[in-house]
Image 1 (cartoon, helix red, strand yellow):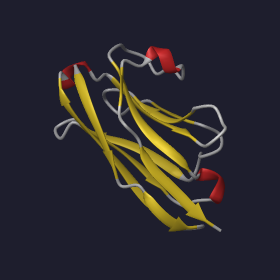
Image 2: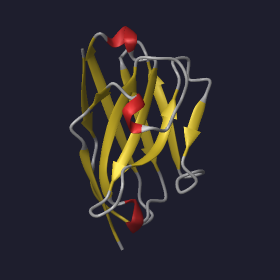
Image 3: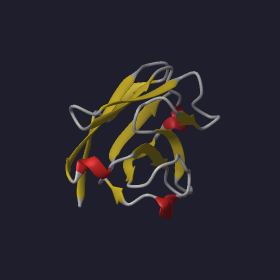
Image 4: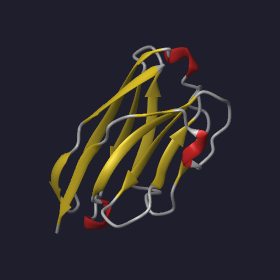
Length: 124
């Protein structure tokens, strides 16, 4: 089992920045791929970014490319999402997810563990 705890969400004005963190505990050696997803009210869950074990391969949704950066610190079992130039449409609950297999995929049921989520609200 892997337990995930997100933090760093909050209320920010458009154009501002936030840094989300997701700390993992338990069988952290199995956390080969880590991802951030978001879900806004009435909308489907969207994969925002993902990163492989070494950090050498990443994925970004088109909607966040150039604004968001995913990174991981394996020594701290933590993955981060630096969010810059935030827009009101970035408002959502952001979830951390972990995949215990190799390869970045953007399919929800390919991820084995999920955090509880952290709310990000961007005001206009």
